[in-house]
Image (cartoon, rainbow, N blue to C red; front, side, top):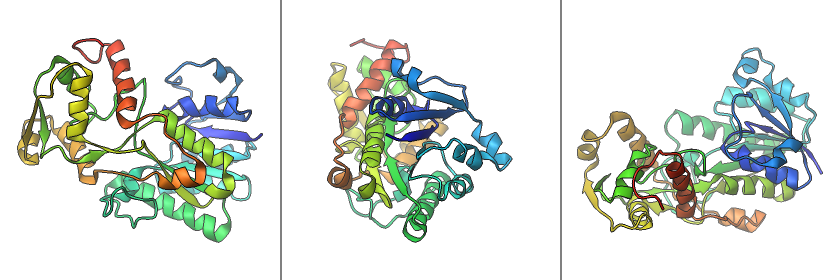
Length: 321
C-alpha cells in the first residue's frame, strides 16, 4: 500500500476520500489549515496523520512545495490548487519525488461546449478567471506528463454536492431560499426556458474517481477524467423534480434572462449567468472504460441528500420530508 498526501483533506472531496483510502489500506497524511473538520464524522479519521500547513503563507515564502515533498509520500492528491503559480511551485518540488500526482480540476475548463455530452478530449474554450486558470494548470500537467514523464492525472468534478453545504439550485445559484420556495409550493421564476444544463456530482463519487485513478495508475497517468453523475439535468427538469420531491405540482414562470435578472439579487443573477453560460453536460465514458467508474448517485439523488441536510439544519423552510 502507498503513503498518500491529501492537500485540502477536510474539504468536500477529502471528507470522503480520506476514509476511502484508509479503508483500502493506505497510509494517509491529511494536510489542511487546521481550521475545519470534515463535513461528515467518521471513526476512520483517527487513523489519518493530520498535518497543519497554511498553503497561502507557505507559498508566499516559496516553501509550500518543499513542505509537501518533505512528507515523503508516494502519491499526492491536490484538491485546492487554483492558480498556475501555485501549481508550478508544487509540481516543480515533486518532480522525481512521487509515483503519482492527482490534481482536482473542474469541468469549467471546457468553457462553452460544442458537443454534448462533452468528452475530455474536446477542444476547450475556457472563460472567466477560474476556468482559464484551471485550464492552464491542466495544459501544464499534461505537457509535463508527456514530455517529462511527470506522473500526473487530472480529475474534473462538476458541481459538487453532499451533506454539509448548499448545492447549486434550480435557479443556477446557491441561495437555499430557492428550495424553500419549492418546498412551500410557491412559484419559482427561471431564466429563459430553463433548458440550460448543470451537472452535479456527489463528493463521494469524486473521491471514487480519485481512488480508481490510483488503483489504475497505468491507465490514468497522463489522462484527464470527468467526475460527474451519469447525466446532466436541465434547470427546468431539476426544478420540476424538486417540486415533486416535496409533494407539489411544479409552478414555474419563465422570462428572458435580462428581465429575470432584473428581479433577482445582482450577485445571484451573476452566479446564474456564470453557470448557464457554460451549461455543462459532460461524458463519463472515458472514466467508465479506463477506470471502471460507476457513479453511486444520480444528479437528483446527490442534490436531495444535500437538501435533506439543509432541512435538518433549518436552512430550508417548508414541509419537512
